Image (cartoon, rainbow, N blue to C red; front, side, top):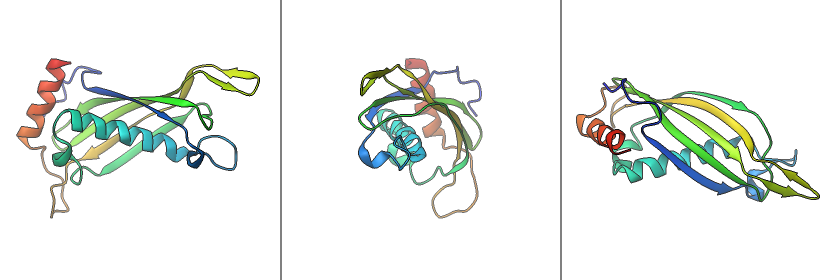
Amino acid sequence: MMNDLPPGAIRETITRTVEWVDTDASGHHHNSFIMRSVEAAEARLFKRLGVLEEYFGIAPRVHHEVDFRSKLYFGQEATTLLEIESVGRSSMTFRFEVMGEDFERGAATVPRRLAASGRYVTVHVPKDTEESAPWPEAFLERLRAAAVDG
């Protein structure tokens, strides 16, 4: 168990552009853009840690919470910060923020601001099972090393 993980010790940042397909009839981002950006940061994090293959396919999401704060527009850059908040026996809790970067929209400037924030939980469910199980020790060692290395 790693519930003594220092806050923000394992984090990833990714910047993506809001594409036309990411918008809806209201003229701003669709809610799914937020989670796709968070999942892209999650994939980059576990790839950097060298455990991408071990993590994906065995860590379904079991809880999501998102607070939507402001709009993102087609062509605007959005920066996602993802942090592992805690690691339990078989669960892992993440927190995230998605910031809309400064953006020229017609004659107005949209300042950098928080677009969404939230948390989600994944649970280790080994392949070919339906039950949660403790995280493998080798996986936890990679997380410990990343927390120490910063």
